[in-house]
Length: 365
Image 1 (cartoon, helix red, strand yellow):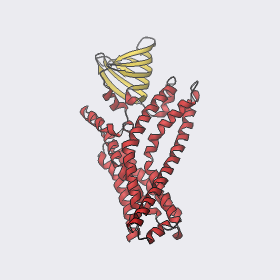
Image 2: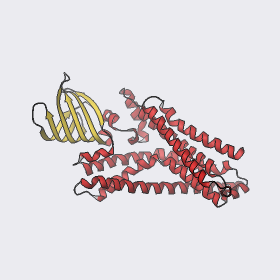
Image 3: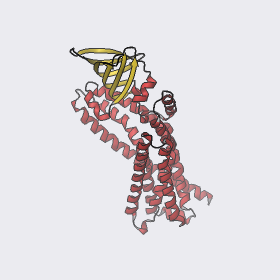
Image 4: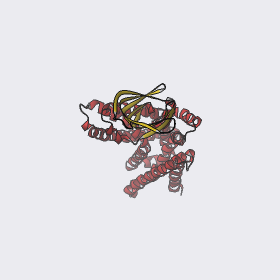
């Protein structure tokens, strides 16, 4: 019996893994195609655009998008796997061999947990690095046309003080986690707080003690605008301080998040976003396991009983509601209305307990 159980467990685990990988590969290809088409549309106004550069930019942006939908890949893959096993009466054979539902979902739970660990420790750092590289390629594409970068996100702002006074720096996009900026606007003030000038630049690069503003135009009161190829703006900011303003938590690799949290706390800055991202990554293996419970609760019904469409819709609805709950708790945490630990782990507990209780009721009454 143990030999049969072990063989069936490996079989169910491999079926689940292949289904999840198939769904993930399909969604990855679809997102890549759609992102490539959208990026080509935005690049129509750019002269001599390179199709290879557009493809590389799009391909490097996709991993971070697919990382967010990984739980749904697990949910859909688990539902497809179990429904297919039920359709082929393999679940009937497993039950006839003495296996309970808890025994043939255990392999999927183990596989989902291991996938979550790999996604947190390996896939997340890779996607963060590729996302930063995609920003560099995007700057090459739209460097001569900063307005095209507006589609990639909102503005970022940081304030600084130096010997010359205060300056407020804004950028439409950033790369290398804030060390390089594109679409830059700078408002400078003297030591008395009086406005001095406004500077518009195509890009900016942080060097030791200075910002290098490239292709800058300086607007000062009472004078005509002056164009400068390179404008040097003194700064006391360090790369670590700049990253706190320009680096979004999603672009920071998992292994670097504790350092960012520590730097933010030492600088007196809000670290709620980084704490939430760190806790979400820690909770990811358990979240994927919770998705397996939800999928099993709605897809272990025998085909001959009917109602398959209703089961699939209920599983998709449960996954969508869990996603909405995670977004709500995330917004509460960013607004400092909920602790990051509670915001990250509450959807895991709700999803896991819901699926576990539903499956317990179905199997054991």
